[in-house]
Length: 272
Image (cartoon, rainbow, N blue to C red; front, side, top):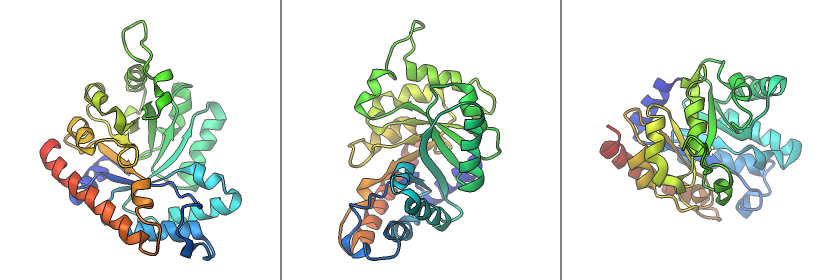
């Protein structure tokens, strides 16, 4: 998907909601567990319930890999079921060099046919370039995450006065095809979004951590929105597990609608 197409999708729907498909079989409603493929049936109903209100889906690869071949089958069926107009992110957090990186890129873009992959930038340009040398495909680099351990490395101050996460963004923006980069910024780090926007004023930011993790959508929107929209704000558990009975999809739709409506107000307020 092109940046222009994603921007148009955001403004047409008045939403920058990304629904994370972190599907845990232990949390699927009991009435689905007798179906031939409970994971896919759950995902299918979540997608049907939320597709009107979001612009992206983000399956978390670990939740499917952990289930072996059955998980891979559920994941592939889920990817094929997601509507074509959606931006699809493989939340896989890969990061390797040489032929390995090329094989990962081929797996995600040629086999799974996703639009973007989350990557660790720790190994540098040659670990990222295989993901940005294909048109309309995206590499989403971990920059400033919301987990407690993020301070171990990401907030380290370098000799030039930059923090490590700032240097990651600044250096990545010097790489060829950097227009195909996005950056992960945790919603619980909203106070730093302003300086991140100064470093990367035109690039999209993928922002997890709104909802169960407690990030403020208003703060994220105030500091992160730009004229293109420029944000994909992810919500997973708050939507997926809004209810645990036969009404789970209705509850998921209600949560997604509430976020979409709030985003519409912020787009008008902060996105111009």
